[in-house]
Length: 29
Image (tube, rainbow, N blue to C red):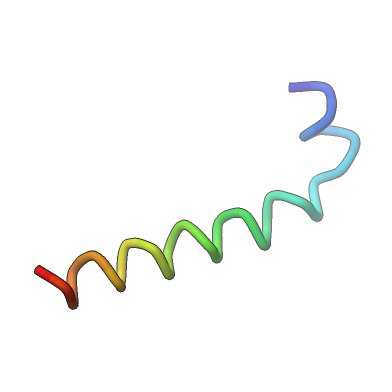
């Protein structure tokens, strides 16, 4: 939790990767 608060920028690429993974899963399905 502290690391996320200290580095909020890390949440951006993390969320983007999650969205991309969801898109790929939907396309595969």
